[in-house]
Length: 153
Image (cartoon, rainbow, N blue to C red; front, side, top):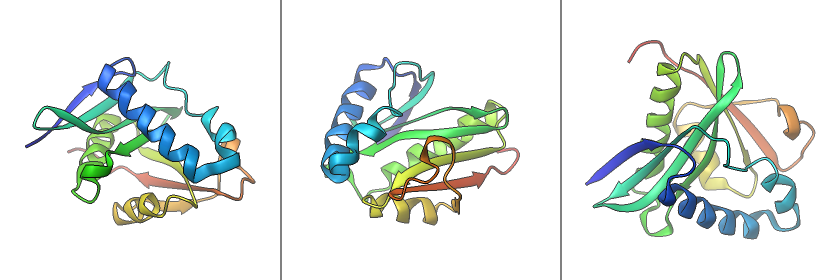
């Protein structure tokens, strides 16, 4: 059974899953990892979720304010043993619901060319590619997406 718990960035299971995410990204990003890592600190994230399968943490994600009407999705991760089982979709759906509850009208996110699974997932969830924003503008390896959130639930 999968359960999703809303929390913040100090939840120990969220912290541990993000460490695993960072190890994976260090390999995928190679020499560019330190550039991306500077934008992925979790110390000030107020809205995070952890997915549990039978009380064991298997996935996570977070949102933070991007601008007055947009939330940025951050730190999406699913444990290797649970990839392909719908965990990331459940996490993102929960984050989108939470973003709507907080009054946001859209979500934005950044991923990299070296994360083809993430790109496929975001496209499947109806995220549309947009021009790279903020610190990712002009970064060849970055791919940015957005999704307008439907009103209500």
